[in-house]
Length: 115
Image (cartoon, rainbow, N blue to C red; front, side, top):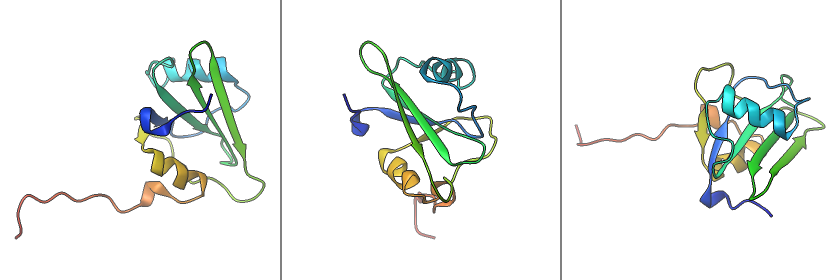
């Protein structure tokens, strides 16, 4: 089954993750390092130190699904070491997969009155 991105939360673990880990190891990272529930309706996204390999896991009814993309050239834009997990939208996920740096995008401004 494929994940409907409009119905789940997407969480990015900043910094490098050991990509030798498979679904069980990454689920442990979600639980212990990210302090999130790996069984919730969410996609958890990880990247290696070279930023050429991205993995994502999610729980689907009776087991974890593991997705992987490895770049032959270039690198993924990725947040460096940070203390907080980043939550992104499905649109931002697609931009990230296309190599666009969502971490340096214009931020949304909210005004309450014209000055």
